[in-house]
Image 1: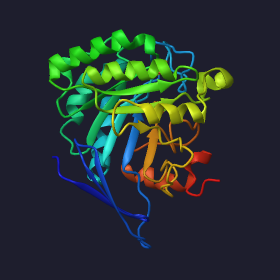
Image 2: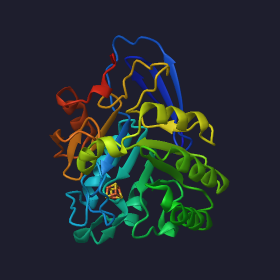
Image 3: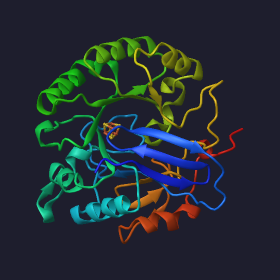
Length: 306
Ligand code: SF4
């Protein structure tokens, strides 16, 4: 189940070790190789009780889904058979997903998916609650900290997860303008609570956050400060961002080459921040490959950024 996976891609061979999220890339020009997405994000639902005013996905209490249990299972199975490295479930709030016709909730779905060999993770705000005891051990949970004021609540969830599973969830930190010192203090407390896997997500002017640009979008200098003083090694910054002086990977962020997002309306998109794409109908990986040339991309997807 945990064997190394690899993909023969135009930039070289990419090897990935599931459950360790370890990447090894052997750079070499592969003229005969073509792109294939190896990381897939699936938004299970746009339902979410938090209804945040900065939600890029426009999720809320009236959100819905078109995903049925059998369709998610078929899609992830097909991805797995085609060598996909990792599948992430999100939303909306993925723990609110259910399929009444199959009498299945989110945790039943995780059980069905956990036998596949690719990494399976999900991102939750832990609202209204997470049933940590029902999450299979092979599944990787990520909790989002949207504001440093939520630290107490998030630490409580981390403790519950540790008690039930014996492992500490990864944490996604939302980054806003003017809050870097508070975020660094919160990060330090999370490190003390045992968190080692952090992803920094600077707020983006998408969805309901579109009008918040000048108030909430962090500056490049702030992101530099945050990365420089972050209290944990190997902190990841959302691949939408390239900092000044950061060595370029020539890959762009990879969206639509090695990553695609499928939303709650079954629409395949180059990334979660794009509104349009191609609708999935057979729940097969080949539909992703067929859609690739037609997907609209953002500027940050470019392999030759200005
Ligand atoms: S940002 Fe996350 S928690 Fe907030 S409404 Fe959107 S999906 Fe829900």
